[in-house]
Length: 353
Image (cartoon, rainbow, N blue to C red; front, side, top):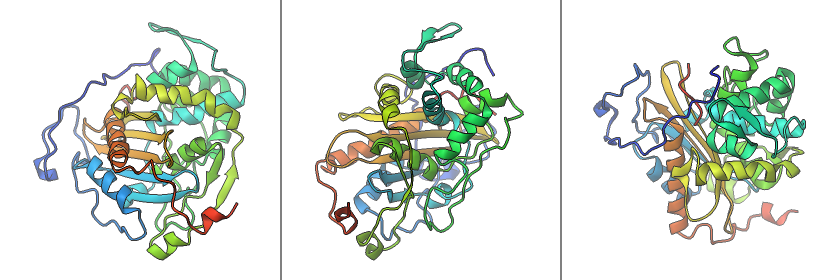
């Protein structure tokens, strides 16, 4: 583990988006084992999806190889999954998105408060909001070491790691959470980079939904027909005692979008989120988990990119921001939620982004 967080430049990368993977440009830093560009909609079943959401997600992802998962955090309904094969797979290293779970763990155990400041070599003292917004590895590695593996693991499992996020979602895998500190860097690498964790996009979407709705971890449900969607009934997995902690972490997640690693997601309305960038088995990974905080409809948008050098967290944030923008232009957030029967019932690079 490095003594201080190495912060990858987050300027906009001008990368052409070819129409097929065979036209993929040579990207320095490989060899990459997965293509940067692909038809990410191949094999998807769209029956039961919200087609307005689907169109926005497909258009925003474009030719990049990845997955977009959109969830209604008020009830756990999966509104769209672009690239269902990737989203329902055995998972991917979470990179710095794991820091959200770690922040909640530290606040729960009172190891940190929002005002506590940690000195980071070369960067001075910083609080939780700054550390989340800029994804400071050293801060979260130190926090993980103070908590210890057992407590970090306890909260991670409480928040849904290592188990299926969905209820009766065909093909969904539970991901993986290690039973002991990683050999490479111990608990510090786990809490700053997500070392040895396999996170699925659905798991990140479920956690983001719980933060967005005040602490209810829903089973994510994925209607596969219009009839299933029309008769959707929410199912609660468990209530998380994080209500008082949510206002303590959202400033850092909003800060990531407003001035930090996720600035490409910035839109007119407030968005809170967390980026993640790392490499795993010669595949570059770019994550962004987010939710919007304005309008009559609240959404969670999770983006995962895989491939070569362009697959980074800031680019994933930009794609999520484009999803929100496209839906905003269609006045999606101004409308109230649809009335349903359920609604009537009360090996790493700097890896920091």
